[in-house]
Image (cartoon, rainbow, N blue to C red):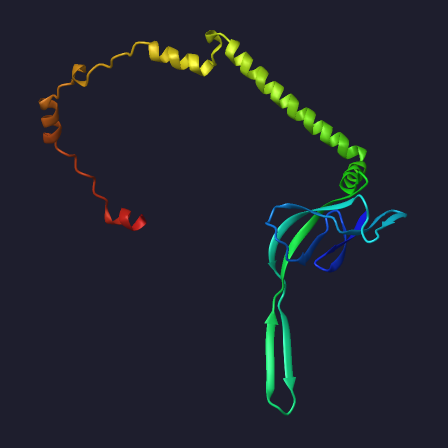
Amino acid sequence: MYAVIETGGKQYRVEVGTELAVELLEVEAGQEITLDRVLLVADGDEAAIGRPVVDGAVVSATVLRNDRAAKVISFKYKPKARRRVKKGHRQEQTVLRITDVTLNGKSAAEEARKAAEAKKTERQRLEEAAATQAAADAALAATLAEKVAEAAPADEAPKKTRQRAAKAEAPMIEKAPAEAVPEVPEVPEVAEAAEEAPTAPKPRRSRAAKKEG
């Protein structure tokens, strides 16, 4: 479904989702407005032509922003007169987005939503259902785990925790001080005898043995 609207002395062909820049309107960004100057509404093979407007036809739009159009250069000159005039102009405008076209209670936005829903394949629907079920199962599992942890007795603590508690309760074994170990006395006589013992002389080798070696 599309419509032809009139605003600012100009006509525009619009449909749901169309963004267009019209002559400046006294509105603010984000505001919802209604364009009631609808000259024509067409839906498939059917069309309603207004004289001058279509009765019961309404076009809804959202104001995106108020800004200015691109600059237009106007340049004039007169030959042989040395006259040059260059001017620039930026027209102020309002940018709209069409949200709905309604004719006698029939909404184009609702029809577009139903068409988009019908285009979804069966596989996409199954994937969405599976994702929803997985999220619900995960939430249920987390809830059950919390309940089990709260109901578990203290004796069922982890093995490492029990071992650490047993080590903390066990008495510490005191080590014997270093002074309690008896020292072996040195025997001065043996050490002096070893120092005074003569060293045996090495046997001398003859010249013949040295030459053979």
